[in-house]
Length: 215
Ligand code: TMP
Image (cartoon, rainbow, N blue to C red; front, side, top):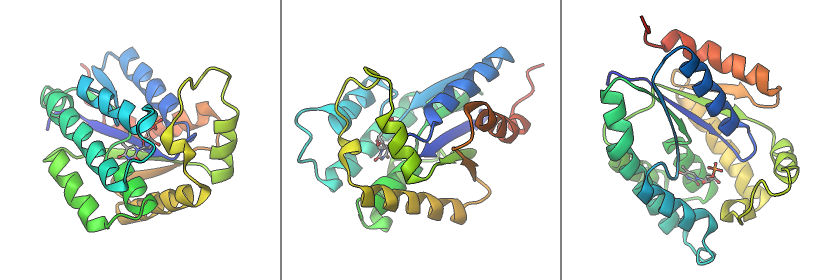
């Protein structure tokens, strides 16, 4: 596909959402057409699914299987409604999480059969794959501290994922490490403990050589 597709991954509090925005600003300053998306979400249907997954008062008893299917329902919609057409039109697409999150969270974290998880992902994404993935890693202690130190009012709603226990997040982290070592050409691990500006520079060095020329 003509456009460049870059995904951002990592556990809670790794700083990826800030970095997606910083990269988008930098690209726009260079007159690059770029689209910022998030998963789950990114379409009207996907945002409803996101609410069900994360915030709904009715989601406390959600099974891991239902969670896997909903993540991929949101993704199937996003890929066909937005990502694929944008890439075909030559746009740069930045996505805050994509299928590696499903491998790490539903596969490693929830312990669902990895071959089933991968088959579901394949069904959801079709032929759309990231050109590059930036995986921001922070130790669990840093992730926990950042979550606790959020400014008052920054997270107005309850988040079902944040109610998970420490062991769950340790398994997610292990999942991400396994993904990174299996696909070193696509996945670049970035030390997310550094200051925001330093992380942003590392990301820029990884992304800028891949950009289409704007002249
Ligand atoms: P975030 O947008 O704040 O990162 O929240 C998304 C949450 O959803 C986060 O806890 C990770 C989780 N998630 C999965 O468990 N599987 C997935 O496939 C995706 C995209 C997200």
